[in-house]
Length: 165
Image (cartoon, rainbow, N blue to C red; front, side):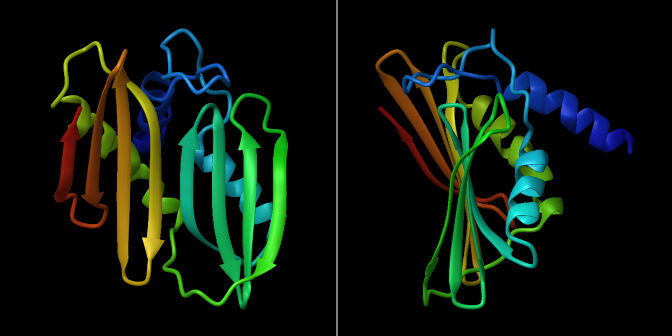
């Protein structure tokens, strides 16, 4: 329980809001909806589905999942918890599965990435995706005109790609 509380506090400190104009996250605005709550909204909207992708960008969570031959997509406002988009379509791709417990590791990898950067870099977006038997995590930071991107094997934490522009 203590770990969950620490995680929630860390989420509030690390993932901070941004206005909806495709700008980096700023420290002044805090997220009202954390990633676990967004995951829960998806599962309530599409019961018995399996989540295979979660992305955060521009104060919006985009979550994709599937059940049988239907792929579901939900876009959720990270400030108001309003559902922006909800749709399902027939899809024949095979995806992996993300569990709610997997979400804890997102912020550990964000912190590892931040250690590689100067303090001027701010979190811009992140994406967690389960494809077949491989789960990847990508995180992007911006500092004015500079960008930094990291890609990890989510299960092992191994850094697969690092790009600094």
